[in-house]
Amino acid sequence: MRIAFFSDTYVPQVNGLVTSILTSREELEKLGHEVLVFAPTIPGIQNEKNVYFLGGFPYYPQPEYTFVLPWGKNFNLAKFKDLKVDLIHSHAMFGSGLVAAGVAKLQKLPLVMTYHTLFEQYLHYFPLPKAILFSVNKHLTRLMCDRCKLVIAPTQAIKDVLTGYGTKARIEVLPTGLSRDPFMRSGARKSDFNVPEDAFLFSSAGRLGREKNFDVLFRALASLKDKLPKWRLLVAGDGPERKKPRGLAREPRH
Image 1 (tube, rainbow, N blue to C red):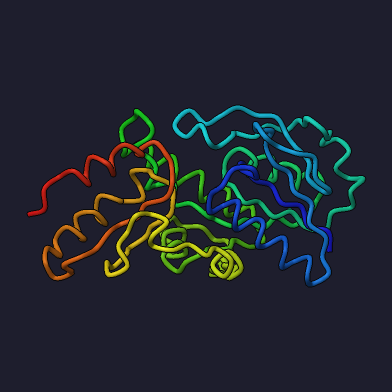
Image 2 (cartoon, rainbow, N blue to C red):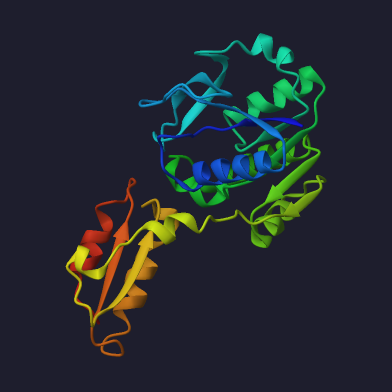
């Protein structure tokens, strides 16, 4: 099959969605399928086989993501039919997700969507009453899901939320896979981070956003007090809340 991925983020950006896209493409290609990626034009992009870059503008609340528009930088969607795609797989609901839905309808192709993000946990980025935002998100999510032949939920919790929204779409739980290769070749040692060898080292890697609840992690570890006499926490990541972990780290343990 020839499968078209649509996404609002792509390399060189580093995040869970990009990792999921790259992993899914690799595994599908191992099975003999061909994957075409439609991604936003972002700084640092490089020409790559079967990757087509579209125009757009950054999301106001999360500038690392691009609201993709249906015109290209190195490809014209009017020529999409020439690619002889069999299936469209959207990795976004808004932006490129809307583009994917439009292309699927025009080309009469089946549409699949992976619902990577629970948008109701991101409503704090928008300066509007939460009740209104929740209602709009619920309505748009249900509308988008109902246009799909299949919706993939990475977790049962996400499936439960989508079902609660009232969508009639078929939903299947398919966790995002991880490759063991990065862990096998990292070679990182405690001494690389000035952590004593006899200290217990916790590590966390991810986007530093309010919805990731890093404050819960910090306060949970602080509550351990002397149950773990010697421990350190290593946080790797960036995001709008990147200054907050430093402030939490300076708070006295109670």
